[in-house]
Length: 78
Length: 454
Image (cartoon, rainbow over all chains, first blue to last red; front, side, top):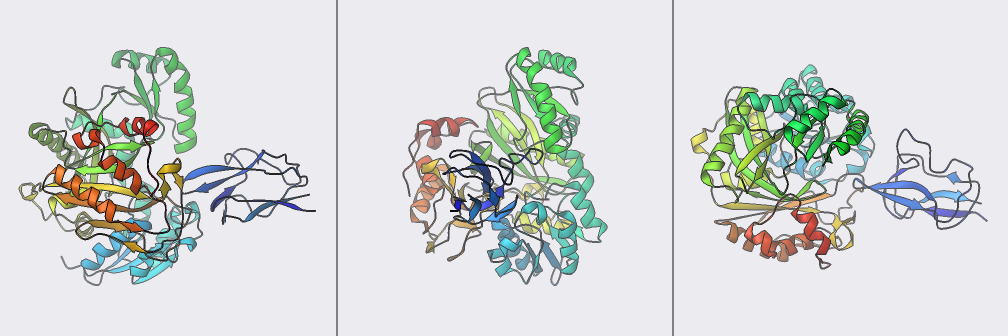
């Protein structure tokens, strides 16, 4: 069954810690509970988004630097 | 000068866009308002005569995209562009692009913006105008050995600053030669990454100083000052509370400070509204030039309240070629004003951003509230957290503080968490009331303070 990680905040979603660095989680990678999967920038302050579940085969539904609403699904996992 | 029928393009958002809209309308101008896709419902769009979308929510693809903003201004049939503060306001290439498109830039010339934006060049200009600067390096630091020599001459502790920085960004403190050797390469790499310019300079660290700044207006030839403000209450180098005048200055120091600002503004042929920032050491009575901001500032209303001058209107008139209408002798200082920044942050929860929906809203009589808010507005999460500025004026500082306490108690902003409870606590604090503050005071105070939830 597919699991989901949602954005806790509204803002801009980033998959990388900095533009010149690799993504926190590559497409198709496995994720462990507590891993940072991205950042949400809300009003110029950055908040880490952590996985609240284990899962495999990460499929991101939100692109890097795209706007997100609170509660939006960021990634689906197996 | 009759500006009736001229079109002003507002290349900004939030409360300053509202403020510029109102000033331009009062001058009889037509207003065209820029907005991102996320800002279509903002108050300035509702006030403006027309609105042009400049791109998606992300500022780098909209408000910071100089090409799109200039194209939007042309599309709107604008005669002039007001950049507000932040975004492209101090971008010399943007100002040049506006002028190259045949439009008026409401601000100084691109050359002045470039010169003052290079903090080393600005320091040199200040020295040449006889304005005191903090003891520091001559020009840019050329290599580690030169940095060591400059720091020895100045005396530790020193601040390492980026030539292309400003606004408190990119500053490191070195207590010893070992610190300096370690921090200079880091600072250089960071400055190159952040600003595209690795140039550094250093200044002696002045601890527990107060932040004072002088408002100037110039027409390219003549300049006047509109007295000073004090902005020592800061968190993470961002101002949260501002006053005019600076109560810590005696009349003689105030006159010297303000005269030095006029000298620098006239030396560089300054045009428009600008602010010279200084550090003031209350123990020695010395003041040192820090940097110049070549734009209108967030805290300009406190100056307007004590001088009666509409700074936005004056900068628009000057941009259209009108000489300064005000003589220095006519700028009287009347009473005391305080501004507090109302941010969408929860001070009871680590200043967590709170981009909510505005419920019922009420502002007490007799105070000024420069704001982007209206009932039912959903605050977008993509930009800074400033919602508005609550401004009070009294005959004395004590009277202004009393008015501020009453105004905060009378503010109603349902559905939001804001920094108003922080200001309520500050307005009751004995150190704030007595003026015993400096630029690190607020962060120290926050370590032990408890702020009641609104």
